[in-house]
Amino acid sequence: MTGRVLAEIALKTWAIVVLAGLVAGIPSIVITAFGAEDPITKFVSANAIGGFLGGAFVGLSLLIWGRRISQWFFPDTPELRIQFSFDQLKALALAVAGVFLIVDGAGGLLSVAAEVYLRPGQEELQQITYDTRWTREAFVRSLVQVILGVLLVAGRERIILGWSRLRGGL
Image 1 (tube, one colour):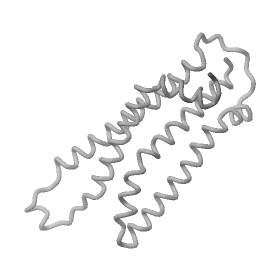
Image 2: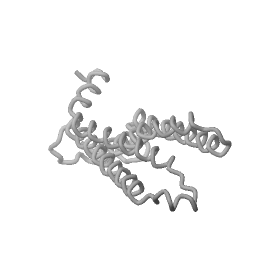
Image 3: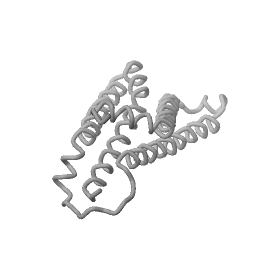
């Protein structure tokens, strides 16, 4: 295994994290897009869809062309003396991506829980306006992120086996 191969694994891991984050954001984009009535919300929704499409392009590009990108930017190095198979490194990369999603999603869930717990009471709401739309979106996004993270960590062996079969490796 060379440094170029490790660079390819790092690029593809980054792609998985980007794509998983985008998948986690789909519910909030859908909630915002279909609930949009005022022009500002429609603008924010269109902006979110544009960001989603751009992120999807970057993530898919890194995943599909990770090997070529690593060949362009990283020199060919001598063989590294690492005693891991490529599938074990893929499993490690999926586990790292999954743990990142779990931690990030758990932080979002804790933030939503704190927001709901610290929300002002009805008598205080008479004096100010209080918007809770972001709370629903953040909750759904964080929950989907945690679920995706758990699926990546728990199912990394099956994902690698399925990917190998899809690519004709078995």
